[in-house]
Image (cartoon, rainbow, N blue to C red; front, side):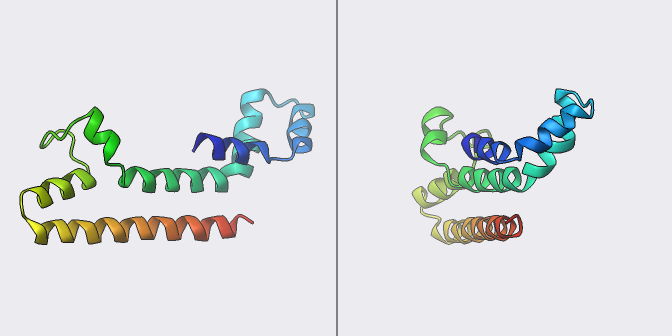
Length: 117
C-alpha cells in the first residue's frame, strides 16, 4: 500500500504544489489542501486493496498470533478451525461469505480506479 500511495502522491503535478507555496500555504496546509485531495482516489484504492488482502491473510496470523479462540480470530483462521473440527457446512458458509466480501471490495476498487482516470 505504501508504494502505491507514494506513487499516487508523487503523480500530483508539482506546479500545483509550487503554486500553493507561492500563495503562502505552508507544507502541512499544502498537503491537506492540494496533495491529498488530488491523490485521494489512489489512496482510497490502496486502502481497499490492502483491506481485501488482509481479509485473506492466514499464514502470518497463524504464525505470529496463533489460533487462540476469541482472541486472534480472523475469517481464514475461523474457516481453518471449522474445517479442522469437521464442521464443513459452517466452513463452506464462511468461505462463501469471505469470497463475496473480497469480490465486492475488488469490484469497488476497480470501479473507483476507473473513475479516477
